[in-house]
Length: 162
Image (tube, rainbow, N blue to C red; front, side, top):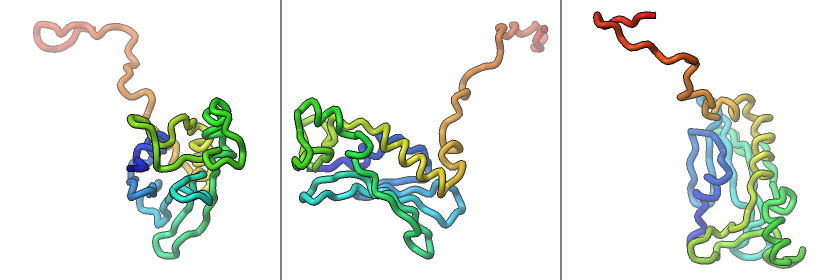
């Protein structure tokens, strides 16, 4: 069964336009022209085909990995509600994790709340890629007009009367 990693990373809403998902890994160039890249992998747990978090790394195009951090799903409350609702206890295989198997029509990470992970990724990338996160966010005023009065109809000669 498919893990659907591209959909998982899409749910995180990481705003970098220059990005792609290959296999279970998200790659991005947050600052165009920079040799620094962002790489996010699903982090394996001790159980086969089971993921317990994200491995976030900054990679230099020539020098390789410069820094990395692992963000666990448990530490960021990703599956807290799901585990609480299903009475899944710590030390259980499914606690704070997801695997590649899932119910039909549902993603493998069903019940995940990704807000904590997204905030942690934003904080981490702000250190290595200052300004890239906010520069990549869409302008919230796009499509809005500053006009408070309707535009007058065109005059017969084709110019507007003000």
